[in-house]
Length: 507
Image (cartoon, rainbow, N blue to C red; front, side, top):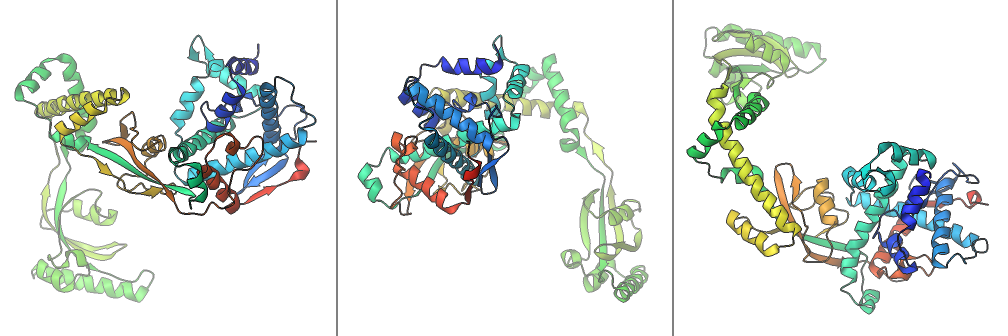
């Protein structure tokens, strides 16, 4: 049995009633039920013919053939194989076209709104498809055999998964409001989008580490364990340059005289002036000369004092001259892109590295604190997964951390107020539904962990007059999709560029 047939069989074994099939396909209860039925590029397809263009994104004849085939299977299952396909061919083609256009518009708008689906989520979905598994484990060869058999690329296949998941997330947000507003209110209200307000607890790992008390006895016991000594050594080598090394440093003063780039007379004048100042500096106080003559506003008032600096902090020409000089040397003129410099080296500090024996106790203390904190994070993760909200709240009180609110933001917001534009945060927020719902995992953004719950979802004013769901057989609006969501879709259809090419329709 081919991989394609196995994919079909694994899906056909689901006991799907007509109603549940509609729910799965339209509302995303199971992602890609239809996508996995599609086999583009079969005989009779229009191949690369263009049937529509959505904001520059092409929908091909192969896409249309695939969508028509999906609808045929859907209606055949709904009507027990008695659906008159040939008689309804034109209707199927028209509906398939609109489905593809709507799907593409939703994907584009969701992406602009920051409703994202991570590569990890796509990967996790694919590896769980039974047809791609061998003895209960994902088999890459079977996956690529399927792609070859369907004449599609991994990018095309995974793009379909991503688009359906995005649509599902947007739909869920609208459903949260939809379920709380009666139909007449929705018809009369001026609504068209959503405003979200998210509650969150921000837990900075680095800050919380400072509050973890580690005793000298704990450090002593930790170091006695040979396995812990290996961990200390690894940590030391990893962070030696960052935490336990002090680079060579120089303290210097300078006088800067600027000139206009590419202007010969200007440069000559600056060079003459800095050379004269060098002669004077051999006899006069450097700081006094700098205050009176330097054109570096940042250091002029301090007599040209730059303080201590290490390699990499100054432009290369300046750095090279300064580090190659001795304490007390007067160097210059030195030309950089800022102008001409006169430099006086005041002091030098040799670089040094704290050895492992000196750093051992410090590293042990840090590792112990990290383990204790990670155990607490793991406990919160378990409590969230078990929906034990009261116990989570109790732990937050122990840490003395409190809830905050993002404030209202809409789907077009790139940076969520008080949070960020990080993908993991956005994915978690779009995964929330009705007000009061908690996100059942800790969300990690760098060294910060977040606990999230939906505070509120509001309607925003945009008239929905004449934006009732379309009355066609496959319309989401006919199967329970809310007026809010349908109004949003209609607004998208009206404000985006969609071109249809009927001549390329399937014959």
